[in-house]
Amino acid sequence: MLQMKCPKCATIIRSPFLIEIGSVTCDQCHEDVTVKDVFVTTRGFKMHRDDLLARVLHYRALLKDIEREKLLIRNSGRSSTEAQKSLDQLYNTLQELLAAARENFRLQIAKDFPLDIELSGKTGKGRLLNLSTKGAAVKYLGLDRFPIQGSILKLLMALPNIAEPIIMSARVAWIGKRHKDEQDNIILGVKFMGLDEKTRDHLWDYISSTP
Picture 1 (cartoon, rainbow, N blue to C red):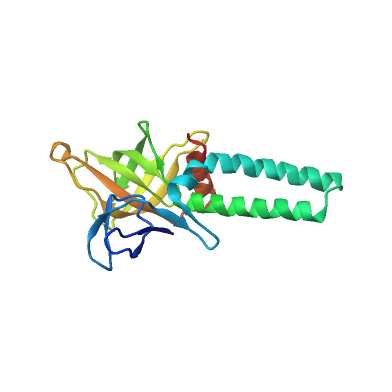
Picture 2 (picture 1 turned 90 degrees about the vertical axis):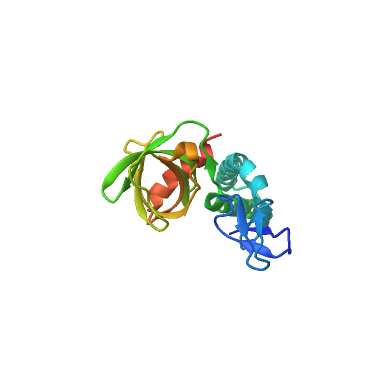
């Protein structure tokens, strides 16, 4: 879960959408406050989101090193039980950190990333703005009709090293404001629906390996 402290009343604000929105209304003081200093919380730890996400690639590499070390120790038969236990503890901690990152990491897409968006049987063009294993922000381009909050879409996107495009159902969680000079475009926040583990793994592999 994501959380931040309300700068007005110090109440803890919790929402899975804190990484997607610029401001949020506090349930306690009812003030609209800027989203900042977001923390990731899990059962075992609490860490500033930016610190965790900045270390994802490092943690993945370290996890692989520990896996190799565990294998060497097991094959050698010369390591003490305490050494094995210490490695196991470190390994479990890294797995928990990466699991939290996987649930809360949203990759900002720097390059042009086109995708197809299907709404009510009609397919239009879009552009991916950011991506997580739970959802995405997309720019919906030049269509004659727009979804409303709660609408069900299908997204079709091609990921590197994946032979077939990925097709995902998604529900519109929020709709961005439309600018006067972009009346035919709109930004949507969508939440994926019913993703199988294989597709989720493909998304995470792309997200966590993109610098």
